[in-house]
Image (cartoon, rainbow, N blue to C red; front, side, top):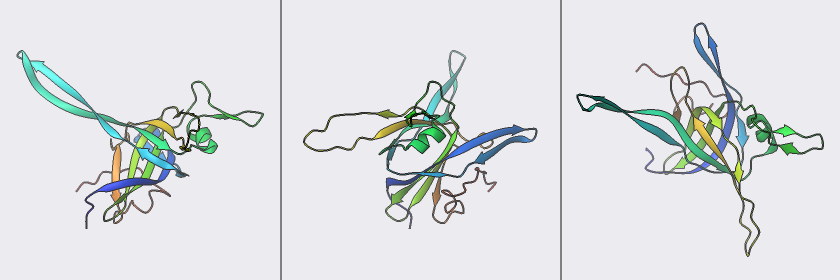
Length: 190
């Protein structure tokens, strides 16, 4: 039975995404995914740009291009290991972990799971860049409200195929390996 609705987010994983250009074309390698606990929300949306071509004093042709996916990833808190591996943070000699100006950040692969009324789905985003963490420190009032951290994400997609995002059902071959050894996307000819 197919899902009628999807809800929730869990099992968030991030891995490095590397493209190497060779004489035969681009070769993609995805590192071993790292689990990021505390997923709260992710709001990926496709960015569509209108392309209008004018001729004969009218819009002669019009089309849309889906150039990228953008969204904000919210978690309870990004740990120090994530910050150093994926955001270019550095360890200080006195033990602190610090953000630095113009850090070197790898492109990443992101995968997570959503629940459905019938079955779980897994979602993968390819060739993403990560912005800077935003957080809001605030005083405790009558009740303790957990603070979260948000990270802007832009996914430009897999270079060889153009795939930006894919969704997997539990019966799909890529479902079970998505969190352990994800493969670069290959578009079916059927």
